[in-house]
Length: 186
Image (cartoon, rainbow, N blue to C red; front, side, top):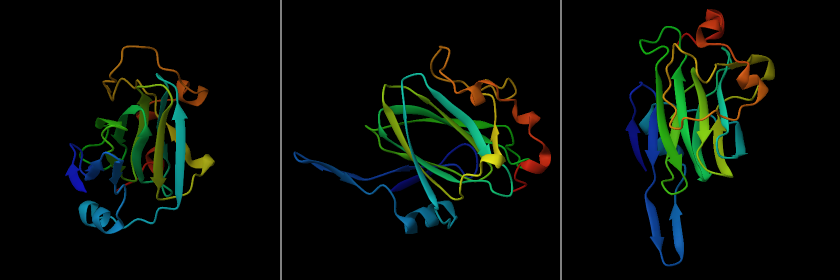
């Protein structure tokens, strides 16, 4: 697997080596040793989620409050997404910056989103399925939401359409609305 550092320190994009022939293909979607060497992190993944979304569904931007911040390893098994990570680490030199990448089934990369980042994605195709591993359990009382179009972030989503949002995402506040003590200090 090839690991590439992205524009915000800590974010990493993994590209697997695909072995294919007339029968189909095979690739290694996760290797703990390679993950640890590339990211410098040795997390214990404790939960895996699988979502299916219609085209135009925007999920996020979500994060879990400190001290239960979650790291996520995200990949698409069907369809395509524009995946966004927002640096919500209050003392980071890149606080409030975002990075977006397209993940798809035809280029089965994975995005490592470290703890302390907000995460969201826009489904670019019908019936898109996303699988992501988490480093901490979901804690509903610690869930925080950032508005997808927070003007301070200026995320450039790839489609000019009104996204399909869950009520909690439609009613989300801005990153600056989240109290300092709830954001990871690292």
